[in-house]
Amino acid sequence: MTLVVVDANFSLAQVLPLPYSPAVIQRMRAWQNEQPRILVPGLWEHEVVTGLRRACFQGLLSLEQAQTSLDELLGMVLEVVPASDRLHRRALEWAERLGQSRAYDAQYLALAEQAGAELWTGDSRLANGAAALSVEWVYWVGKS
Image (cartoon, rainbow, N blue to C red; front, side, top):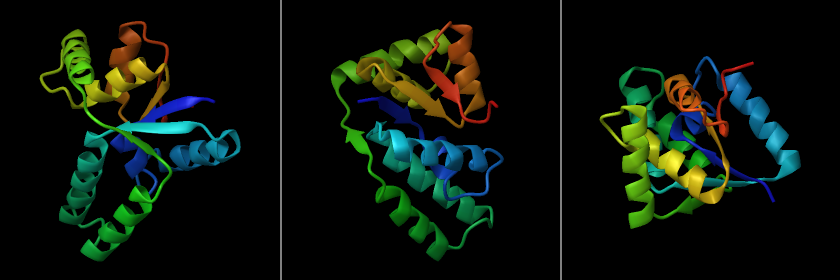
């Protein structure tokens, strides 16, 4: 069975009008046929809530719409992988390699690496940073 890791940016594009939302929806439809196991790190939930709150603050969603969107995202068939010492340590290493001051994005990389999975992201900087390190299992959904 195929394993896939998705980040919060990818997931939020399913409920927010982002430039790459059509590509995310197309990818999710393709996965309906393939039925991969979709993994996310525990921080995914926090990032999704933060993204929805940001959309409310920017006037893109009402609180009610954000709550409905949250229900939709939390209702997806995802496997939330709890944090572990090993994942955190690897995330620190990934953040160092990418030259990042924060390790949020690196958590997704560490999980995908540990699971032997593809990482699909809505963050072009993350995908470009991984590509610069010759990482071939990170995909930016906005790339045609």
